[in-house]
Image (tube, rainbow, N blue to C red; front, side, top):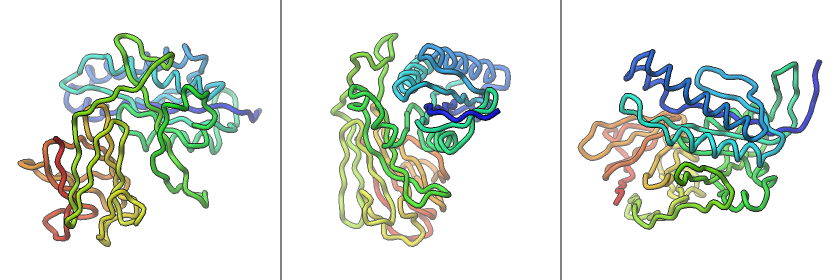
Length: 293
């Protein structure tokens, strides 16, 4: 029997789990990830949600409202963030959530809202909550104050791009919640990008910049192998993180290290180096020079 109703769907997965299995071994990795899943389940139930299913290192949950989903997301992120490192790796979560109509068949749910929530989780980096502008508008004013607009993505079957938002959160001691929270502000950590004689600077937490061929990007890179919106660099606490969104990959060289190719992956930028869009830096073209002070 099918039943259609309005709900908020949340997907959360453990970032870094594949590498953890390789580094720490199956037994240690499985125990650590199982612990994360249990914390996620408790956060869902504490916000009046329901875990629909667990798939490997990912949880899918259903909530009566967007506010409840956001509260659960912040709680689970904070709980996992408080865990000690395992095998030299600090685990974290990527969360995507979307409000809308779902079709329920038995205990499972289906539909466009579910598919979109899953795609939003894929867009998130470790420690990030991603939703759409549409869902952000459903949040109560307190929660909505701590959202910021990101970029738009193109999805199969949709004629217009889907505008994304990030929900900002932070952990304070043993409590991670939205009750009276305020975002942390740091004044250190400046990102400088240089390309064809131009210099772009980012300083504040929550700031981001998109690199790509499209003229509307924060930094437009004139390279035929670059995607229209190729990659994004954003500040996460005291770190600058690059995430690739492209078809051909982003090639990052940290000064003194070997070049790394990212394909729909993320990487923390360190010290200084170069970012080449769509091809290795050695193949020519003008790379973007960066520095993190």
